[in-house]
Structure formats: structure tokens, C-alpha cells
Length: 454
Image 1 (cartoon, rainbow, N blue to C red):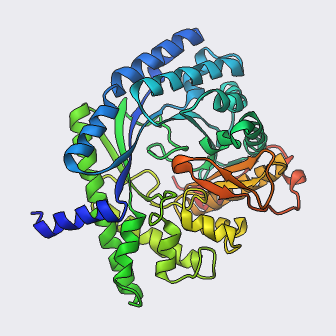
Image 2: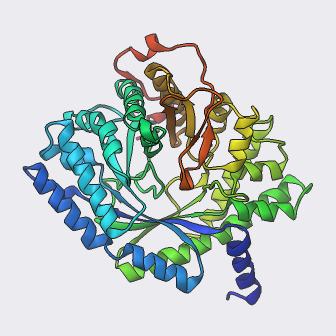
Image 3: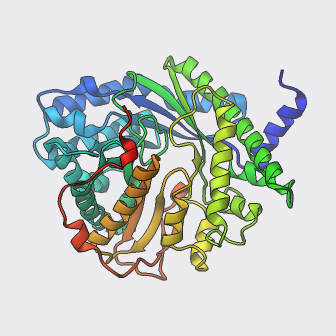
């Protein structure tokens, strides 16, 4: 039974500690939208999205109002578009038409973002995959709600270095195509290794081919709640620290479970997973970096940061798993620089570097996320950064990602404003030594020996 103290505690978590349901994401299979012409594909896609998700925004608002739980974003993820468009698309322009149709559907149903303008090329690329990848810069430039992702590696297959090389160039082209908006297109483009099929968080969300026709995945977030809980155990032992994080994560996840089940019932769509991710926002008091400070490091990036983040990530997952039978997606702690006020401050004062962030990605949920770099950074260097992150994911059997923004016309010392949840960030320096000879090699980096489990 829920007692009055638990009700009061949850109310305080929402009102004072920024507890929210970060997103309700409806995953929709578009496998039945293939057709002989691009126009037919577009028509089928728009019709299906509107039919399935037409009531998503209103339902989320109703639940938020009735339960008093903020639901920040309403989103959609779809089958990787490189698969959906394979039957009809013959040029990159054909795929851009699909991107526009998806954007129009997203606007009509009232969602913030739609993910799945994607390709999964961890072992090889079809012609359709290549065309979609080539279309990404223009697609990001002419749409406002579409998010794109490309999975270039996995523990089972290794790393497709041909795709890594291409994506370094695509990131640069996307930055230039959206240069009038501080290269905002790159904030909606992520390169992944070991991408999960059920991730509700953008920009890496897509509806995997192993999923059912439609599904509801919910992402919850509460960095402020965890920080507040840890303030009460300052100086306590690691055992007390760990138990506090686990108990707090349990409570946060139960709120998400309630919202997910109610949304599933009202929309008539099966419940998929809860993604318990400590996803920060630029708001004061909603920072993962502040949690690390509360654990005991002076600034994010100081010695001890990676160990503190590893502890946090593990305890969040352990607490969340006990609160729901279906925890999935990414689940853990996110460290997007521009979306976390504490991370921004650490980067500005020099405590946090890209190299330290890379070390932190070995133990957190995703990878190098929302990092602004000089616009003149070579494409081969960006590919090298992608390869490094993919290697971490491949060897450690975890999801890693790169969402990096070479801001056109900006250099180290400048700052860039993305707005909203995407925040702002200082332009961070990148290692000036090159890797073009490495990136120019063709083929795949083979899977590690421990991947051979059948």
C-alpha cells in the first residue's frame, strides 16, 4: 500500500527536484509502408503514424494533468528508414522526400521529435543504406523534428570502418548545411555502436525490426532527485551512498511505470520498456555533474570522476530493475555537455576535456554527447573520434555513441546556443594530430574474441 508519506515525498520530488517523465515514445513499425514509388511510401507512412499516434499528445497531457507528473516530451520512433525506403528510393533526394513526410506527420500529431531516419550498417551497407546516409545533411536542413542515427558497429560484428569514414564526412556536411543555425543539424544526428532496438531517447531512437507493430516506451529522469537524496548522506560510507542511490532510482522508476501503464491502456498500444536514464537539462538543479560533485569530486572531470560515474550508473540500474519488469533502452547516466549546466561549467573552466569525457563513456549510458568542436575540424578526425567510441562499445559490450557538432565558423573559446533542452556549450578543443591514414583504410575492424558466443 502507498502511504501518505510516500505521496508527499513524490510531490516534493516533482515540485522541487525536477522529477519528470522525460518522454513517452511510441514506436511504430513502417515495414508495411513499402511501395513501388516514393509518393506511395510517403502517403502510407503519414497515414499510419497519424492513425496510431494521433492521440499521443493529448493523452500525455491528460495523464500529466490528472497525476500531477510532468511529461516533458512526446516522441515517435520508426523502423530504420533505409529499410522502409529500399523499395522505392533511387537517389538521396528520394529519401529527403520521406524525411519531409515524416516531419509533416510529426507536426500533425504534435510530437517534439521523430527518430528513425536511420541505417544499421554495423557489418555492411546496402545501396539503400548509402543513399540514406548521403541524404542526411539535406534532410536535417529541411526538417525541424526529424532525428537521424547510424549504427556503425556491434560486439558481434565489429566496426564497419567504411561507414565510420563516411559518417565523419556526413557530420561535416550536416554542420555546413545547417550553418545558419549554429550547425543545429548535428545535434539531431548520432553515430552509434550496439544501438538498442527500444531506446526512447533522441537522437538515437528507432523502432527495431524485432519489435511489434507499435509499442510504448517511457523514459524517466531525475538527476535533481538523486542529488537531493545524496545531500542527506554527505560524508557517509560507500555502502550508505550506494543504497541511497538505489532506493531513489526505484522511486523514480515507479513513477515512470505508472505513467507507462496508463498511457498503454488509454492508447491501446502495448507497453514496452521503461528507460531509467538520468538525463539532465540545462536547468539549475537538474545536472548529473552536480550529482558527481555531491558524491565528492570538485568538478566533473577531476580525478575520481570516472569511478564516481561508474558507481552512479550501476546503482541507478540496480534500483530501476527492481521497480519494473521491463527496464530497457539505455538506462543509466547521460553526460551530454550542452544539456547539463554542471558539465558546461566544468568544460568552461578546463576541468572537463574530450579525452576525459571519452574515459567517462566507458562507464556511463551512452558516449560523447552534444559536444561542440571547432568548425574546421577535419572529417577524418571526426571519424577517428567515432571509431574510438565504437571501439569502447564493441569491446565492453555496451552502447556507445557520438553526437558531436563541428560548429561552422566557430573556434575554441566561442560558445554556441542551441536552445531549449539542447542548451548551450563552449567550443571545446580537439587533439590537433591527425589519423587520416588510419581512417582511409577500407573494411571492418573484426569483432573481439569474446563475441563468439553461440
